[in-house]
Image 1 (cartoon, helix red, strand yellow):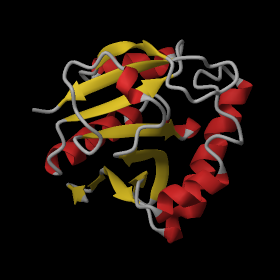
Image 2: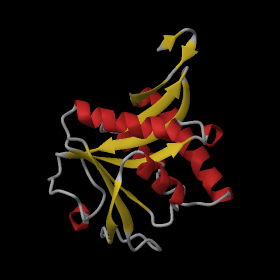
Image 3: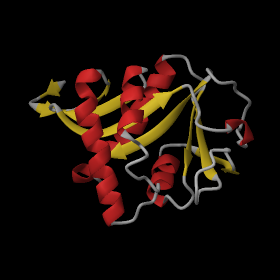
Length: 181
């Protein structure tokens, strides 16, 4: 959408035609993380090309674009990865009452330009429009950029817990939530 000639970002649900763009965002992000500080401890195995294709096929993969250019990617689904029941959530909700943000990535060329903030705000807006009661997520402990972003956007800490994912070197995750109603 444009107003006064200005192009705005938008978050779109991906179709098969977007797989290349989404994969490129994640690949570039992973290379950038490996060359700098890999806060989320991502690797070519996560998110993998297969998991990206599966997310697109199941309708939970989103792409942030501006004037057709991919700026970031995120998975937004009802399915938590791991044992979310362990969280110190502010209220008890069952799966289906909240959305979970997974694998949020901003293309390295667009870091510190408001893309992450926009994407999270859009995820919360989608959750609100669809009648969910909260948005929840998990972060690798020490992923300070992600934690700062979520706290800035009104998410509250819900404990550091073992989500039973059995990932080498990551025994627990920091949990965050933002209630909608």
